[in-house]
Image (tube, rainbow, N blue to C red; front, side):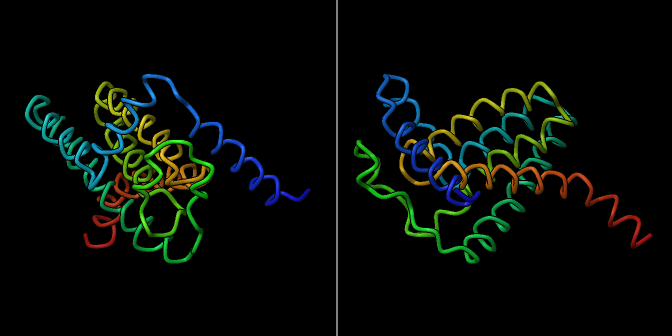
Length: 182
């Protein structure tokens, strides 16, 4: 079995296992997390709270987080999804009603996860406590994307990598701009 076949098999098995979670937590909390992550609402709300309660550091963290979300969204939804035409996991693998609410776009990568990880990774170096708090919904959003049947685990992993890259770019961009223009 080659590497791609192994990834495919792992994706299939993990997607089926995660979508079959039938606990109270999975039935109630994961769909709520998915709704909060739509159009990056949860990250905008976090930015508002950080700006209002965190003083200068909170405002700096909020701007970095939202900048990283913007870069992550462009990279994942504007570039990577157009390079890959991966179909969503088959509906028959998903044993609950959330499977009906899946997007039409390519499955690869997860833009929701890219935004979540990007926001969290940009906030954490500036305000570690807020970054730790943001990591909780970021992980829940990533799990929800697989549980709902919207993505395979490798789509979520790729989204996380894109989010980390976006945060690194946003963190280094001011220095790069200053070096080239001053």
